[in-house]
Image (cartoon, rainbow, N blue to C red; front, side):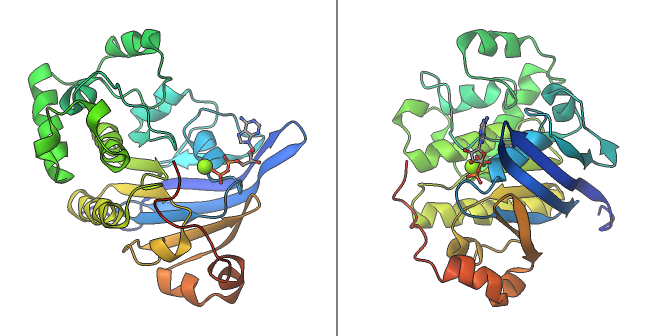
Length: 268
Ligand SMILES: Nc1ncnc2c1ncn2[C@@H]1O[C@H](COP(=O)(O)OP(=O)(O)O)[C@@H](O)[C@H]1O
Ligand SMILES: [Mg+2]
């Protein structure tokens, strides 16, 4: 077992401005190895921008990001990916004319765009695994997500929730040590959303990887077995703690739980 004290991700005083807009004002938090952490907060509070800075898609205005003890500021997205980090995006983009298994076999291109040219480019990125190993890994990932029966389905035939699962599966193909998932269950029906969280919990427990997961529904994440929740508001960390601590924090309750909030399944 990995020592509990090792830090997978350390974000310190992160700030990101877009012209006059301060999207991320001052964000500091850590994710330990083997930890399953939720990042929540209202729309527009800077969650995805934080992910974009961590994964090297955006250069932060100031502050620092360390991954497994290494400063990743200034590294390209593919260099950061090589350190063992993979991420998904809020809007899932699968290769629609391919089957589920084919989508998994395309080398991880999570840090890339979705044009056909970029798909071709990504095929030439060394993957570090033989084709046979990749196929074995792809079926292992589908097993871990409990959807081996979907292997030969065309992704264009999948529901929104199933597509999200395939997207998560794709991000797991490269054996990441740190997985950043941006609203992987937004718009996914409750039972499937819970199943996805259960599977992620089990993957964390069985493999010791770290998962940081963005979710915007407070009521929902409080019940999903994450170790810790980081609550953001207006570009800052409002509080962080165990689900119980977050539940009993009055400031958070007033900001989120008191509000009507949004309801799963309505969007996208
Ligand atoms: N590339 C960008 N250019 C300009 N403004 C952006 C960009 N990305 C995000 N923003 C703005 O930054 C703020 C935070 O956005 P975002 O990080 O996407 O929030 P969240 O993921 O928490 O909903 C929003 O006001 C959003 O409009
Ligand atoms: Mg977002």
